[in-house]
Length: 194
Ligand code: SF4
Image 1: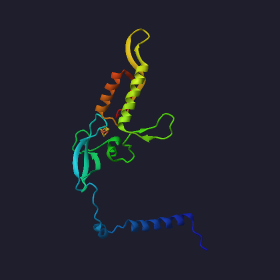
Image 2: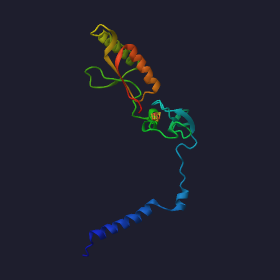
Image 3: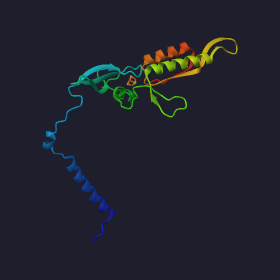
Image 4: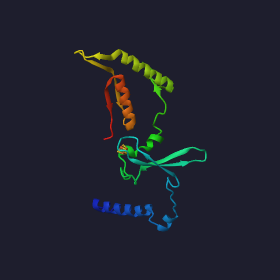
């Protein structure tokens, strides 16, 4: 039986792959002309908006389509090329802003795991807000320091900390900081878009 060298084998393989590739990709212009591809955003309504994530204020184009049953589908969000701020570009975070509206991984309701429990259970917003308010009040009452060791009035709450998520808009971050400072919270952190 005829033996082929490794080089001959690789050469034959490459030639075969090339011939297959041209065939599989189908560089047939007549055939390509028959393929009518519709863009997903074709005919969609375009609205201008502003990225909520940071104070840079990049402009967005949001594409929506209203369906026969009355609901409006958010199809696409991208940078606005007419904006002098971002000229059509978005940072990685802004580029994912579509997910704010459509991600199926977002949890759209509060979940609660009671002390000692293993399972999370769905609870109402009323339950959540009341529990948050009660816990914040109890912790503040317990840990508020009115005077430091030198007798200076400080009124600081050392038992609470606040961490703002990067999904905060600038206004939400400002508001949250004001509320926390009003409670005397000194441990405040905020992820800025930098
Ligand atoms: S988060 Fe990114 S895309 Fe959004 S405003 Fe800031 S820099 Fe622009």
